[in-house]
Length: 327
Image (cartoon, rainbow, N blue to C red; front, side, top):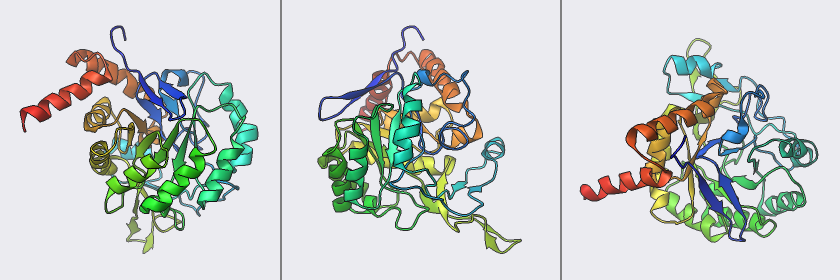
C-alpha cells in the first residue's frame, strides 16, 4: 500500500468530520447475515474499511415482511452463476432505536472501526425524535438517513418529494452535529431536485442509491417468489442505474456523494469514483461473501498500482481528462 493514498474525508457543516481510511464501506442491511454483524469474525479487520453501516433501525421494533425474504435464496450461488437479479423484501425488520442505543452502540464503540448509524422514520418529527435519542451516545461517527425503503408501505415517500426529503433532513440536522448522510431512492423523475433539497436541508453527503422496487414470479407455483410480493432490486442489475444517478447528482452539488449498487469488484469502485462518488458502499456482494469488502479493497490497491494512480484524486482526474479530450 506504500505510495497509495485511499483516504477520503466527509466534513459536516457543524465542523465535525468522518475520516475514511479508504472508499470502501459496508452498506446498511448487508453487514453480516443479520445486518448487525453475525458471521463477521475477528479475522475480518473492520478497521481496514472506510466504514461499517449496520442495518437500519426505526423508532420502534419492526417484525418485517413474511418469508421468503430473499431471491435467489443464496446470493453466493447467484454470484457464481453470474445472475444479475438480486431481490430482497426484509421490510426493515429491526429491534428499534432504543435497543440500538442501549445495547448495540456500546458494542460498536468497542470495535476499532468507523461506524455509521442508519435510521428510518415515519415522519419528520419522528426523525428529529430519533436524532435526539442519539445524543450523548457513543459508538458511531455519522448518521445515514434511510429515506427510501421500497419494500415497506409508503417506504419511499420522503425521497420522492423534495419538500419531505428536506424536512426530514432538517429535523435531524437540528438535533445532531454528526456528519449526516442522506440515502435516496432511484425511482424518481428528477434526482437533481431531491439532491438540492437535502443539500439545502443540511446533508453533508448523499448516498445513491437505495434498491429499486421489483419482483419475480414463479411460473410453477403461480405465485410471486417473495413473501412481501414485491421487494428491492440490488446486485449487478442496479449498477447502471446507480452510476447514472451518481453522475447526475455530481453535476448539481458539491457535497460528497457515496455510490452504492452492484459493486462486486475494484473496477466497479473505480467507475463510481469516476462518475462523481468519493466513496462506495458494498451491499449484495457481502451477502454472497462476507470477505468481499476486504477483497475489493485489496483489488483496488493492486489496480491503482497497475494504473499508476496514487490517490482517489488521480482516479477522478483521469476521468476528467478523458471527458475533456472528447468534448
